[in-house]
Image (cartoon, rainbow, N blue to C red; front, side, top):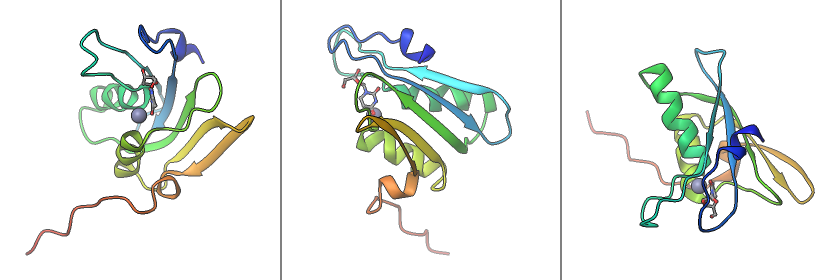
Amino acid sequence: MEAADHASPRFSKFRVGAAARIGGSTDVISGWNVEDQSLAAVLHAEQAVLIAAGHLRQGPVKVLRMAIWGHGDVPPCGRCRQMIVDSNPAARVLFPYGGGILVAAAEELLPLRFSLPPTPG
Ligand code: THU
Ligand code: ZN
């Protein structure tokens, strides 16, 4: 909720905040959506968290939990789901939905997701 206060949704006016715990750190890492003036590079709150987490870790990030917040239903978009599940299929994702808080594993939120074939050799 605090992260959403930092959001910059100049066009949609829809504030989104996200906060996560990641492997190897006790920090709670937060992020928020930013809508740029070109409208070509909107940053989603979940992506902002992943970027901040990478900066903190200076290496690969394993999301353990991520909470997303905004007014009304705020399920993460498909691209954010892919990024979270790539980080850790078992990551617990929490978001407001249907008047409550829905909690699901990242892999449950994107069952038929793209994944690269194993590299030969
Ligand atoms: N938004 C997010 O921050 N995360 C999502 O996964 C869904 C959408 C933001 C982007 C945009 O600034 C606003 O919500 C309306 O789409
Ligand atoms: Zn998204």
